[in-house]
Amino acid sequence: KIPNFFCREHHGGGAVPPVVQYIGELCRYLLAQPPSAAERRHRVRLALGNGLREHLWVPFQRRFGVPQIGEFYGATECNCSVANLDGKVGACGFNSRILPNVYPVRLVKVDEDSLELLRDSRGLGILCGPGEPGLLVGRIEQRDPLRRFDGYVSAGATRAKIARDVLAKGDQVYLSGDVLVMDELGYLYFRDRGGDTFRWRGENVASTEVEAALSRLLEQTDVAVYGVEIPGVEGRAGMAAIADPEARLDPPSGLYQALSPLLPPFARPVFIRLLPHIDSTGTFKLQKWRLRAQGWDPRALPDRLFVLDPRQGRYVPLDPAMHARICAGNAGF
Image 1 (cartoon, rainbow, N blue to C red):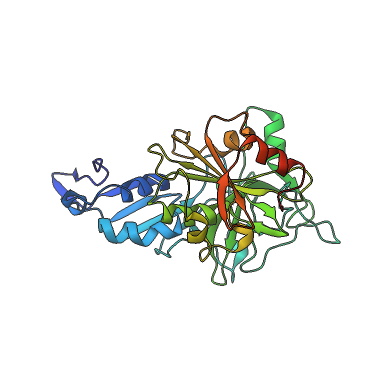
Image 2: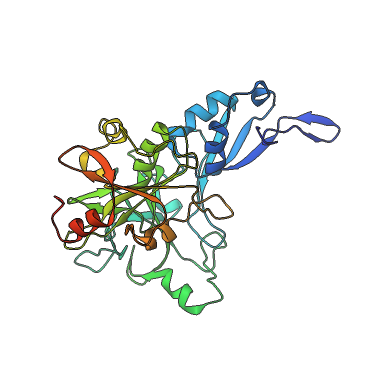
């Protein structure tokens, strides 16, 4: 059933068009529900939140009749919050490229694996150009309530969030830990949670893009994509954990062929894991770190595992014998 997400609110004795708040995953859950006549019986004028993926934005807005979506990026402690106030599809914020010093937040280049800042010959951070993914940082100014950073209870955690000499000599910036991209107009787009972008076949793979492709194919089911190591192979191979409680995908026949026109070869998952459900946090964020730590050894996992057979161009069962072949470097990877 559609929850009481679109509800009427009354204020001062008269009905006013309400504003609702969302978490992006909730929008995906709503889209996955069967259509209902009740889903458009509301007076919502604005849905405000974060985490709404670009490929769900327009379908959600059209299906539920929400006139405006206000996406934002931020956290309680950060000093680099941004907002998309004019409904630019997919954008989580905006910062002027003409007057960037009005709000000193920037995207700086980092190492893809460690997220360590890359620096130029002067020792300063290297700013990203339009279309270049980078770590979002905000200049810390303790006398400004919008730009200060008070830190955490743990002194070590506080230090880990601060970098010096980034935008100018002697400055301090807050490290968001998230990778974003800015377009030529100044709109900001969330690319990936820090550490979720991985490198495979010499290319950078954004897990959110792979998740979006799989989610569209599988009717908005839960999908978590992350990189795993293969012994003796450079980079991390993509692995997709897919919630499949009714075993509809066992085996995942035709999945590779369906993904081929949607993703370049390096972004197509090498491993598939089918499990009853994927654990999430209290804000519906899938717990990839736990899945990544569990790896892809069939002897240690109770779930159905598959691996891409490059020669056949399809996913085949990953059993202990195939696992041994891959580890020995005899599987074509």
